[in-house]
Length: 296
Image 1 (tube, rainbow, N blue to C red):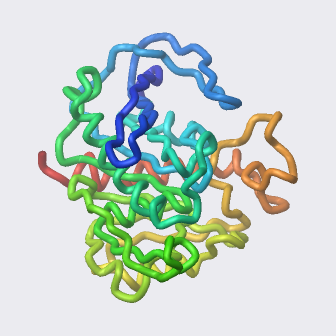
Image 2 (image 1 turned 90 degrees about the horizontal axis):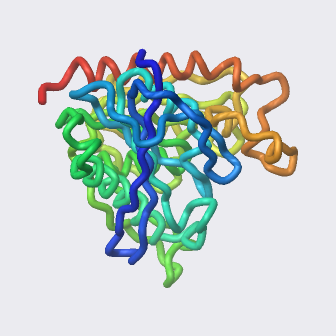
Image 3 (image 1 turned 90 degrees about the vertical axis):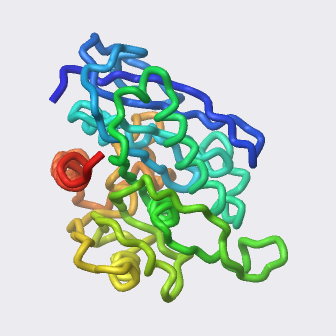
């Protein structure tokens, strides 16, 4: 593990939405870390530090509905210090700063495109790009972020009638990205995948669900396992006692409240105590499927 976590921020223009998407990168570095704040979230990073390694796999992390990538800062930093570049795009239109596309087909179309834009930007970036290992890209997605990952990996989603302008269900126009070759799905939301719509997903998948998740219970994982081309490529475990938000970083004290569900866990579950296990499981899976298995 490297000594520190570097941080670099860029803006990526989305021609469809005609807006800039913030994308942050965390990566292995050797410089001294300092506390940086992103709204109410803080993390110790070495801003614009030189990268400490070359030939690094890229991970894109897709946040949940109305969320922020900084709510997953701990797993992102762990992976960066373990030899990955982690891209943290903000899904404009479905984030805490702009949630104007929530519950729309447009949002279902936008999110996978944001991932491809972040991958393009990573490889084009003069600092990040030269250190990346081509052909070694993975994704982590939480909740609707897992939908995003499955759509990127050739899932064919459908929008429900309440999500379309004409109130008619329809297929969602998404472009898969063949550069993504492994998925980590945390409390995945699969509402948008019907029979046969995951049969073209043919890459390794790690799934974690919570036994006390009332939003996306373990039946969502079963949709994936039954739907993908080869269920043997799926590793699924149920986290005993965990809820829908238990994979997220601990929230700052100012946000921790029973009226803010993402900051809460089911009674008796300690997300801080559990998360080192999650981080180790994710790192092990990514090491096998990105660092060791694919040729560049």
